[in-house]
Length: 504
Length: 118
View 1 (cartoon, each protein chain N blue to C red):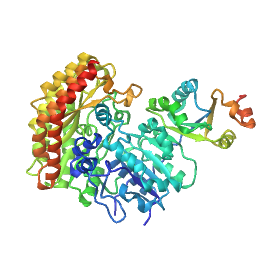
View 2 (cartoon, rainbow over the protein chains, first blue to last red; view 1 turned 90 degrees about the vertical axis):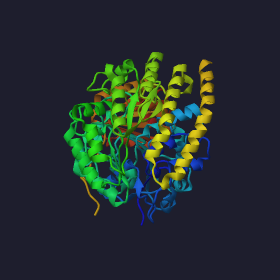
View 3 (cartoon, chains in turn blue, green; view 1 turned 180 degrees about the vertical axis):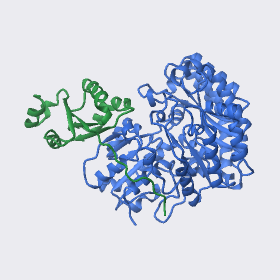
View 4 (tube, rainbow over the protein chains, first blue to last red; view 1 turned 90 degrees about the horizontal axis):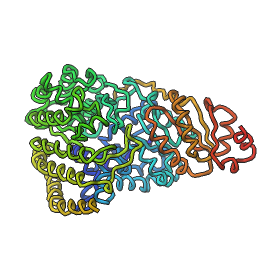
């Protein structure tokens, strides 16, 4: 069997991260203290594939592109990067997607800047593009179309774009445009070098196709877009759409049938599913959880991709919604926690007012630090473990703003969580600003980095015990513990070095 | 049987066409912003006719492209033969031809006559 359109990505994306989504973030760093192959084993083990090289689980974005193409009548499939050679002589179009092609996104760019070492995701992607299979396809005249959330990064790697013969960059929601591009390519028509998919081409809820194969760790989209309008974020630029429950359940079913062991509800803010603006409404959120959890049964894992701290506080304080969801639906002897990514971004009210005025809504930005702490307390009490982000180097940030962030991190010490620093990357409405890099660090930034590191190390072992239960995780746990010990040994020396650099 | 969702997904190709001859310079990029603001709602097809490598073209267009967060834009890089076809018609609604400084000298005579003396 052959496919006209082969869809793929590199190993750091084409993996299920041992069924633990958080482990995927390890690919954003350079391999420190161990060889790269071991680093890749921790973060990106090879997935199961069928005899055609199609992975059982594949990134959700690629699944949407695959579904749109199949429904339009094309012979298209997602192929694991190790199996591209099977199609090197037959494919007509190669489509590639990625979250962070060149490690310019957060947090890759930060680890790169801090250590001076190239992150694993970038190395892995470059390996893919230089692989014999991709080179062979290109030499045959296969059209190469790249897209996904990191499409913008190609505009900073124009020489590689030429060297690798990339025909088209697609930036934005791809479901409609990929069909048009595939038709053009197969008819031998000229392709655009670049497409930005504007609001007039964003698919409606009805036009978003259902995935045909399983997604990584059972990720299923429940909403697209976000109403909060934070200036540093690109998702907020998209129109807000709620995916109907029957479509969500149909995709959960696709994953269950493929043998995936869990579900991740994907949204920028899960609690805003069918919300009243930024105020969560309990009924649709409860119904969503009730139906999804009934479908997956008691043993499969369950997580949220993202939630906002303001929505967590509002939902609990007004409706006891968090404790209800967790204790009546989510938690049981098999599911002892719920993981989620949340954004703190800053502890400064002044900065919050400037760059994310609605992030605290329905509470005023003046209450942002309290909103953060209250939400952390609520999550701690209900076994929700957040991986929180803090952005350093936001435009207009002052030393005082960073000090406020440090104060807030201190207040969060009692709450089980991971706090990850991110250097500002120009995205969203702040696209035209400059990257924040190591050379821009001030002493207070170093102090903030240290605080976040101490917080995360303080909670890491406790979280690992709950997060990775079972003998199958023993090797990964062993390596992670080794890595943490290595970091503990090195970090003080490194912080002193950073302080010296900053003082100069 | 796999679940099937809605099948008709029609991509709205950009309606308006702007041609740039040569690598866009600063003043052209500034003008492009104006055209995008006034015509972007229905999409903008930007056709760049040059012998320069596309990396030079995109370097010149990078800020313009990155600052767009709303409108559909397609960018094509074409040779002079294709440019002849485009000027001859059949490429959507051609609303403007820009010629970057120095580009006229590199054009074949017939094309120069059409685009440089407008």
